[in-house]
Image 1 (cartoon, rainbow, N blue to C red):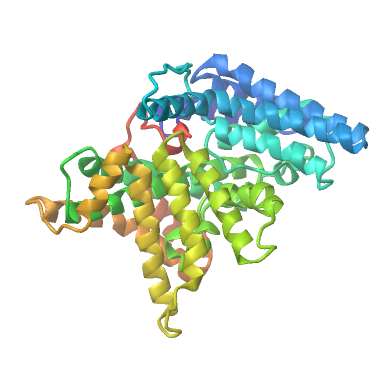
Image 2 (cartoon, one colour; image 1 turned 90 degrees about the vertical axis):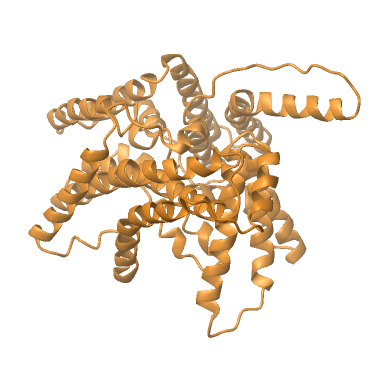
Length: 462
């Protein structure tokens, strides 16, 4: 079920009415959230509900067992069970065919005609998100940073919470789970913030991201695209993926606010970053901090000197690339970011020009990374990269740039406002007329571009 579809609007209306009716009973509200979340997820394919439920049950009972068994050997076995169940599901559904096909290609190149097995299974939507969310629960209990809960309903609702189930933010149990265990209050301010985030998030998706996507597809689906248009097509994709993904996160956080929950901020003006490390502190924050806490630091982090730190960064970003998709372009994208994280600090920048030059170089790094991310194959990457060094201009480039500028303008205006006020809610201090006018403009534009069936969010495929 898509946020940007008529079906979801009807679903949300029914859920909101029932949520209001059950406001005096915490247990009933949790049950309502759980049932609604499973309906939301099962709308896509009900068969994969068993995968979601199975992952949740394993981690719930592993958490209880970790509390009861203090012996180190038993605890390691329990954590291995949780890791095996969650990462095993990811491996089978997301990576088995990729590695099998890659192995066959390598063996064929070596002159060995071998047919490796393929599963050809459908990738369950959101599996990379909810497995990481559920897995962090058992890892935090194992690390003595969290006490397990014995409230199964609350835990199942925490893992399956429909606003952020299929595309994040990837919440930690230490933040979200306690909110299911205490009475939640919906204030006027939380309602106002929630409504704004939903309106702005849908505007970013429906009006901006989908139109940036049309511009990006014109370039990336044209195998003969070259020269200047590749630059602008890559810029279009960079803004598409940002508006698409951050738009989803905004709607998720907005829905949560309206239910009395508080989800973490997942994006913080990433295109204002002045270094690759600064970008990853601003982009998909829930994932970058997840990898920092559960992979980079356990590998050793920045301990052991610069060589060890670079190794750990490369491994972490390689895994992050694979998390995004089973394709060599994602592997290359992860390695690219890993190398830039390692090398950027050694680039000498004049002190007075450091913020501006740092931002400019960072954007070059980030947007070339989006080329790697968006390209359809390794051959496509080579062709596009080569075309960056040719300078040709198709006749329609002027109208292309004009369309790109038109859709960039409202986003840049809002982000500059957010940057200067240092808040994601810069309109809240203003009077009701200004706020209402801004929301009305966004609603009207979203309605104009609304597609009744909805265009899928990019990160649903991950």
